[in-house]
Amino acid sequence: MPIAVDIDVMLARRKMSVGELADRVGITPANLAVLKNGRAKAVRFATLAALCEVLQCQPGDLLRWEAEDVAGG
Image (cartoon, rainbow, N blue to C red):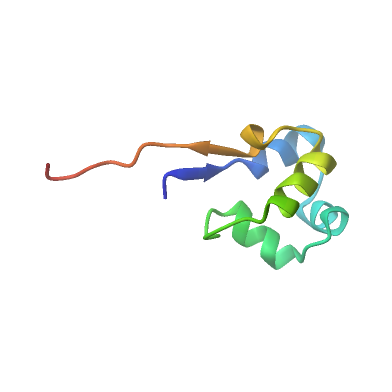
């Protein structure tokens, strides 16, 4: 997927656990893991805003676009 999720980076910078972040944002640890591991198909703006508020960051600190490799042409 061309959108990479860098929640791990912000968690490390803030010295915060996944469980603590999930609790403070108001989502389940399982749903946060899906997002964190890049398996989510979408993220609600309300969830993104809550993540940014708790982590004191901008959306671009959590999400970035990566070009996909185009094979065969």
